[in-house]
Length: 154
Length: 306
Image (cartoon, chains in turn green, orange):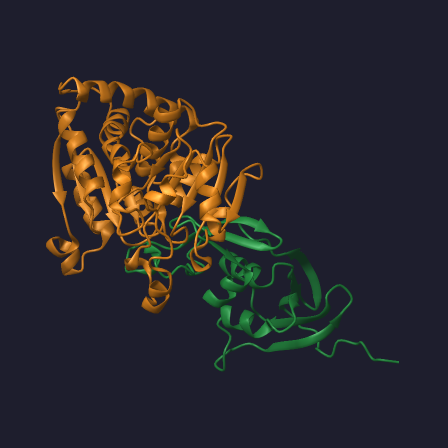
């Protein structure tokens, strides 16, 4: 019988990001600025069997609770990710990330000829036009970006 | 209502506004043909910023403002403005906001007019933003068609040429999709209409993609030809592969229906042969002339008469 047990230890306090599409965990770490100088323990499960997705990635971060902007960024990479807030080994709160209606300064427009890619004093601004599949539209040049283009711009 | 509103996209102009533009344009046409001048904008100043070459759009905006009694201040090229010193468009617009009552802008980057409208308390009119939109050209195109046929509904309108980068086409398709028209698109395969334009059309839009120019020219009411724009290509080999890929000569134009019209936002290079200029279907110079009453209508509706 195949052992399907998740081989990542529990955390005492912190955040669990589950249901990340397989292979996207490193991208999420990048968003959260987690690199070699990280101060807390981070456990990463890559290509973990999942009943819902086939395979998924999981990240557990000790002593870190995420900001709204970080959750919004994660929703662009892992639209179905679930977030668990852990306190003293038990889950105090669990919710799914949600792609916001307006994305302000989160990603760059894929249209290189868009005015927001120049030196103007504005943040990029996108409107969500579809959540499944993900599609957003630049409020300046009106170009749409799909999931693949969003990944490339982050 | 358009009063004090920016017109960046054709979506900023409601169906009612379009009908009002038609009505006021008729009044302005009458004024022009009678050789009269209005003074309704006598205390108003229009600032124009043309960071890309323009003949018709700039002159017709300026002529329209003068014919309404208003004044014009202008920057005709980026090299003669603070942009050459590295100033942002945002700062330029903040300055223009204090100097004028309405700002007209043409800029090579998409989204520039929208950005300008965010930094201006005065209305901004988009006179072309890169490969984005050109809503006032659309209004004069619609007005030309309406004037010729007395209606828009029921017409078959073919658009030919650079549908990928052609901002006049992008705006016009969006506007036509509000009417009960049949839209037919003809272009080299690498210059097909972009998905970001198609995806914004309502599902009911009757649209076909074709490559049979001879057949399409015979059964269209409006044949709208565009220039393949060398300046939009980053790959000049790509440009060379499509230049001259279609040309309307006397023989082809002769196949058009008797009451059909041939339009072009101009300038043309070799898409329409000079011999066609004298054929009854040629309407592109009339179309360009309609830019004056239509822009007079728009400016008067935005700035009001007081």
